[in-house]
Image (tube, rainbow, N blue to C red; front, side, top):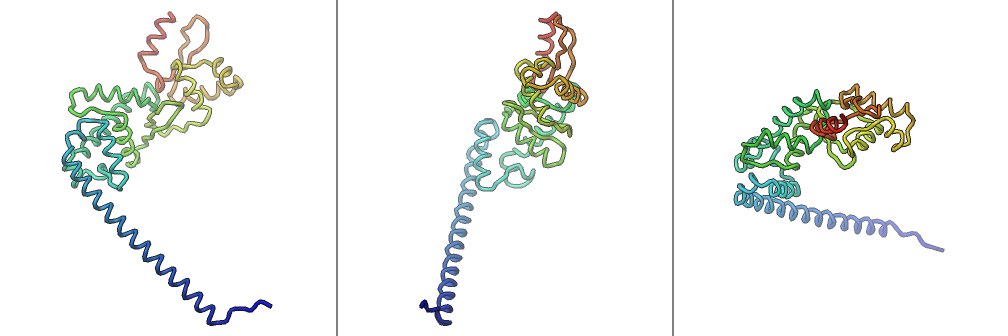
Length: 253
């Protein structure tokens, strides 16, 4: 018959478990202290690196993106405040603030044409044109970082992905799966027709027209009826450009 452990055995077992727990906590605490020390050292080295390469960080978009990546790994956000060490050393707080203001201006100026949804590449082109006399070149990564700061301010700006393209939304328009599929389809030519949507997406005419009408109402699409085949084109400037629309109209006439 199997004997049960006595009270002394239970107490001894509990004491042993308690000892293991204390040892485990001590080891965890030591590891945490070591990690904190390593992070502190790395942050100090990061500051030295920033001082040494501040001109490259300011002037080279690729170098600047790599620097941001290094910062994020140790929990440093140079854009968190416009004051303090990073802003004074690099001036990048001012750079992204100015960039954010210019992005808002471009989005407001083009909203009547694209309904508040602009292609990231087109935004970048317009931004570079606006900043042609500025010393610091601007990259796609810079745009995305500036927009992320606008989003934190509750300004309604958001980056959405449609197919292979990134679009910037500056109005609270809710796009469902049907709308996204139409926008993705339109990336090939800049426009779609009802017949093309039916054929390519295997939709009924009613479903295609309903989704396209919603996009029209939101100001995201433009109607083009001036074609010999009689098919209405729905142009989307957020995935094309104004010049592409003009060129297509010229060819069709």
